[in-house]
Length: 627
Image 1 (cartoon, one colour):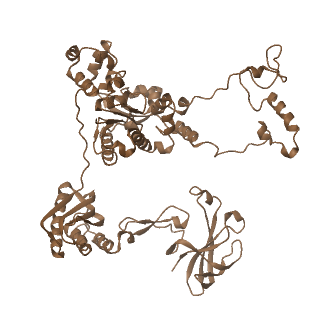
Image 2 (cartoon, helix red, strand yellow; image 1 turned 120 degrees about the vertical axis):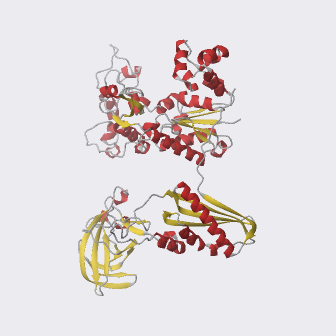
Image 3 (tube, one colour; image 1 turned 90 degrees about the vertical axis):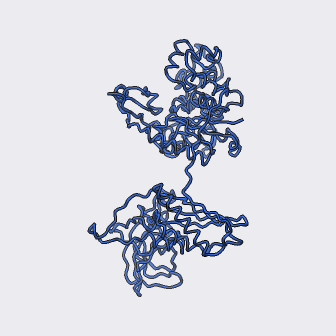
């Protein structure tokens, strides 16, 4: 029996505008603990309620009879407790006077060294340490979500007025609903954040999600409207550990993207669609053949019918799907039309409903089959020339250019040979591509012969027009380095060709990063001179003679060779980046530029400021060379 899942994204237009909301602290829309707890908590969490609505504030326990007993365990004559600092109905609290007196007698009987500190007695006579790290991650995340999340709506023009097209969960809880005029919403929500609705962008985002689902979850994924997807789980659910594990995984993926999501699995697309949008839980697994019982209590709007049909049904007192099932079909068809009966039959499985899956775009490729296997370099080169010409024609028709090519050869013994080449810049120059691939012919081992050859453009980019600098433009023609870089990368390897670019970091080894050869590089600030050659890892130096705390070294030994310092400049103090690593909170480095008697210049540093041992161990290291 086929199984279909319906993925519902109720707040897609607003969640798309806040892609990092889940990472910034909003609680996970579906965590394993909520799945194991009560259904009401799951429903409230899925609807996006705040922390106060999910977990109401704790109330003190009710006052028991023991609170009205005296010290001897007998009730007072007037039925009230003796005079104490515990308020009536407030329950017991550790700092109450009547609780301290009982405990104080036991404490006084102990030796002085065994008595507990005053803080354990509930007193506040000593200064409390400010605790920044005692707050749990969950509580801090919920608090940030309440403070930072603002009501957000998208608006569109309807006639002469602007109406709300979509609203986030916070805005809906405050009263802003889709279809409401924007002026009315701003009247009671002054801090409302308004963004123009972009339905094409929402549809494009949903298409990308469908493509991702077709590649990672199931090959049959389809868009089920402006707010969800259909996923055919036949033959793929067991790969994820079952339907429940697969549903939890999909919901966690959506939560990481900041998307509120709900999913339902049933035998028919109509039932899954209805349960995902009108069910009581974020994850619903309908048993096979039980669609009638599952959708019976749902409203008629779950059947995907027009508003005119819903209005006519409400006037007749029909609210649920169960009311329609109990009525004769002929009167229903005459009064509401054939679409209502079709949707009902599709949901119950009496009529089929086709899912048109979205097909992932295949990369441009060219294929060549041979009547007789080929094995000579000349034949392979001629076949490669035809493949490149065919692929360039395909790329030209689609307006694309290749950044990475894969050359696949199927030998007659069943073995597949693969050769990959990359380009520094997207191109569809046939001569250039052919020269890069021809250099790889010597790596091909044809064996008994090659019967099939394919050329696939694994990575493509849009080829936009570019201005040509030359004599007509009044500029000197700039040399094109991309072909040279591609040839060098083909011989040396793509990882061996790079440029160094400066990064915003005080620590020298973190202030550099590798970038592609054609990318724009950033330089260091002029006021901070840095060596020409910076070692990836500082090397320790030995036998250093220097005066503490700020004296430069007079001599040192590096790689077994002694150096006598003739000139020195420094120190330049660099502090650790405490926001990256807690161990660098108090770390200090003092850098010196030194020149030995032979004229060699070095960049060395000492760990620590020479005064406080917490800043470093006073070891010396060499970090760079100036020339």
